[in-house]
Image 1 (cartoon, protein in one colour):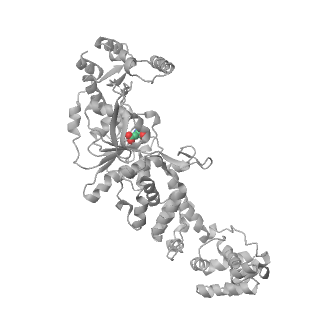
Image 2 (cartoon, rainbow, N blue to C red):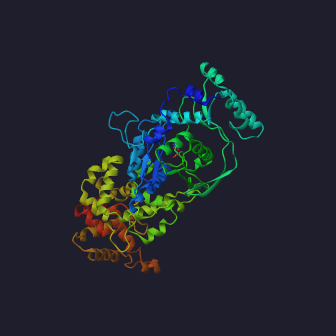
Amino acid sequence: MDYNKLADLLFPNIDKTPEDYEALYPAREEGKIITRLGPSPTGFIHLGNLYGAFVDERLAHQGAKSGQPGTFYLRIEDTDDKRFVEGAVETVINSLKFFDINFDEGATLPSPGEAYGSAESGAYGPYFQSKRGSIYQAFAKKLVLEGKAYPCFLTEEELSDIRAQQEANKETTGIYGKYAEKNRNLSYEEVEANIKAGKSYVIRMKSDGDTSYFKVMDAIRGEVSMPGNDQDTIILKANGIPTYHFAHVVDDHLMRTTHVVRGEEWLMSLPIHVELFGKLGFEMPTYCHTAVLMKIDEETGNKRKLSKRKDPELSLDYYRNEGYHPQAVKEYLMTILNSNFEEWRAENPDADLDEFNFTTEKMSSAGALFDLNKLNDISKDVLLKIPAVELADFLIEWAREFKPNILPLLEDKEYLVKILDLGRDEAKPRKDFICAKQMWDFISYFYDDYFVIEDRIPEQVSDEDAKEILRRYLETYDHSDDQSAWFEKIRTITDELGYAVKPKDYKKHPEEYKGSVAHVSTVVRIAVMGRSQSPDVWSIQQILGEDKVRARIAELIG
Ligand code: GLU
């Protein structure tokens, strides 16, 4: 077979050579880490993407500390147009930006009206695989020319017959060994005749069929040892579009990626990629196969993969809607990414997350366990460190997008800041803010439109007593009382109405009292806040202001 002739027959319009592309995309600066995110534009961006992107981002950017900032770029893997969703690129960029994960290069946000696939920046583009057709073809042509790839005309029917036969014989399925022979050995004339007859064909790599074990150093898993590939894997589909296998090898080489971070579902195809890198004469990048995100199933108590259908928390939209602070999500992700992070955080409570030295070696290769409760706990700590003014801005931004009807209320920022700051500077500060939605639920009673009596008065207090407590409270209320003067008045009412001033007296002799000071103050709490649990009542009243306090008490007295 004359491979030169075959290559020209298959790729008549490809005149650039791999050497041309090598020259076009020169090696990057030695020693710098180059990573990429390669999402398909399906419009769904999930926690797994964020998890991987965070690894990419850290690997590339933490080099800046030692004067070697790397590059993290965005490549859109859009070879499958069936999965394409309008606006998906914007979703990827914006979703990650929210978490302060930014790309240095690659696809960018299009300006209004800009055609799909043209918004990008960087010298290693195009960064949309759909725009790289002739590049893939040039490399496929080279493989054909070197006798390392060939056109395969197997029809759907033939393929399914082969499959059925392999299944019946309990053999590995696919096109390899004797199943590949027919098409591998076509003569030039046969290929030409098939093409003239309009037969459809794919281009397959001619595998060496060497299934002996090879070793690869995975940055997360350490040494991975697997049997070599023997499948004549498709590199170009019948429509000339590359498969993932081929596209990623060509792209990661030409874009000079040093570290390929991807989900462990790709580990299985590593033998194909190793063979492709070898056949193309490219140096392999360092692979980092991340573990699948798992959770404990609420019903069964067993570990399972996070599922798009069952687990809303898999979608990144969930964190935006709920109003999780990006810093909290990242802080949490780092705890599942690196096993030594929590220890570092304990020693460096105020350090910026980026100061932590992230390493792939400390990543777990078994499933990473995602736990929403843990995220919530971490979120409480993170939010506590954020000044109330910033929290207020954060809440306002969240409301702008997800609860615009409360925006006019939040306009009084001074009031909002006071509310958010309540109880935070004490020796044991309140740590109950988790996310914007829940923060709003917690503080909504400060706003009359959202003030509702949610809890019932304690059973120790009769309706009549409740009214009497409030009547006396209102009568003696002096907004300028300091906290101890205020509490003294509560104690007086408590005592006068036959409740124990000291809760422990009530505990010891329940028959002697109707209840205790705790029950009496709960009545006040419910009248002022509508809830039996809240931060310190006196402080809340100071923020609410005298008029609101009096009006609410009066309202409950009726
Ligand atoms: N487009 C592939 C995916 O979405 C990318 C895998 C990779 O990062 O290589 O899974």
